[in-house]
Each structure stands twice: as C-alpha cells, then as structure tokens.
Length: 256
Ligand SMILES: Nc1nc2c(c(=O)[nH]1)N[C@H]1C(S)=C(S)[C@@H](COP(=O)(O)O)O[C@H]1N2
Ligand SMILES: [Mo]
Image (cartoon, rainbow, N blue to C red):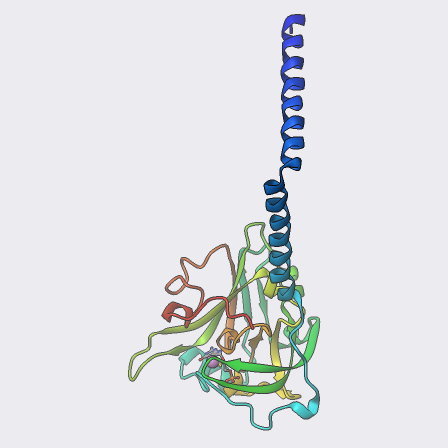
C-alpha cells in the first residue's frame, strides 16, 4: 500500500470517527433524543417483564386443595385401534418416540420414563370452557429428556402427537396434537406425567403419558402422548397452526 493511500485511509477512519463523536455528543445533548433513549430503556424493561414471568413457576397448592373429582374433558377413552391395543396389554409394548430435530432419536418404555429425572407438583388446571380443577402430577421432566436426545441447532418447538382422534358424529377430523416452544419445554414444571394424585395416571386423564405445562391453559395439556417430535416450524403438521384446537381457531400461546 502506498504511503499516500495509507494517509488517505487514516484520514477517512479518523474523519469518520470524528463525525461519530460529534454526532454522539449532539445526540446526547438533544432533549428529544434523551427522551427517546429513556423510553427505549423503558421498552426494554417492559419486554423484560414480559419475558421474566414465562420463567416464573405456576402456583403450587397443598394436598388439602386437591379436587376430589378432577373433571375429565375432551377425549376420555380413545377408540383408536393402536391405543386400544396398548391399553389391552397394560401399555407393556408402549414406547414414547422422541424424534425430529434431535441427535439421538429415542424410544422409551414406561420403566425408562420413570427412571428419568422427575418432579411432583400440585397445580390448578384451567380449561377455556370455564372450569378449573386442582390435581397432583408426577412425571419425567421434559428438559432433561430433550437433553438426552440432544437438540439440533435449528430446533424451535416440541410437538406432542397423541393417540386419539376427535371429530363430529361419525366423522374423525384428525389426531389430537399440541406444541410448545423451548422456553416452556425447559420450564421446571413441564413434565410428562405418568401419575396423578399418587396413582397410575387414569385413562380418562391421558394414560399412559400426558403433558403438564403449568403456565398454559387446559387444551395445551396433551393427553395420550405417542410421540414427541422436535421441529423448526409446524407448517407441515396438521393444518399448520401448532395444535388440534389451534387449527380450529384457538390461540397457540395459551399462557396464564
Ligand atoms: N389427546 C388429547 N389431549 C387433550 C384433550 C383431548 O381431547 N385429547 N383435551 C384437552 C382439553 S380441552 C383439556 S381441558 C384437558 C383435559 O384434561 P383432563 O381430562 O385431564 O381434565 O386435556 C387437553 N388435552
Ligand atoms: Mo379445555
């Protein structure tokens, strides 16, 4: 590089830096800009507040609060062939499939699921239909399970495929499914429950395995889970909205 060009370049760099300095000083002096900067800071704080509650724990209750008759809703006994066969064998051949954007796909039987890091919690289930029930759940924490499979870098959502189809009279409209993002998937209260109120999870509440994602409404709590699929988007799943009810107009994010 010629000396001339070097001088020219240095001049350019210094000149630009100089311009920046002046601009910055001027910006800092301007009261309108000061106000904008302050409100931007306020915005960040508000955004932070919106994010922080997603990590907060859902309220937990004491054993006396447990509803004596936890309502069952939606499918309460899947008529689907595959499910009927599993139920007849006491789920001895059941394997939870974990696949999609994972390094190591898994097929876990109930014993393997019960051996995973677990959590118990007494929480309130809120259905959009206007009822609530309090129950105690025990299950495998979803976070450690996903870590065991290993997420690929482009993993964004976890989809829960269920055994049951829902529909009108004589018409099966589609399999139930749900999905959550990785924030909810790694939330400490997000579990794959195999026990309810200290008993084996009953059929009407989703045996052998159902999701508890405690910061979300009832329809997110997928029952009768057959497979967990890690995806980047749900464009190719169901009708593309991330859940059976979402495909039929419900909000995907059902945070409470
Ligand atoms: N597989 C499956 N999961 C499901 C449903 C369903 O019909 N099928 N219904 C949802 C709705 S709307 C609610 S309120 C809860 C009901 O769970 P419960 O029967 O344990 O009360 O399950 C949710 N998960
Ligand atoms: Mo619901």
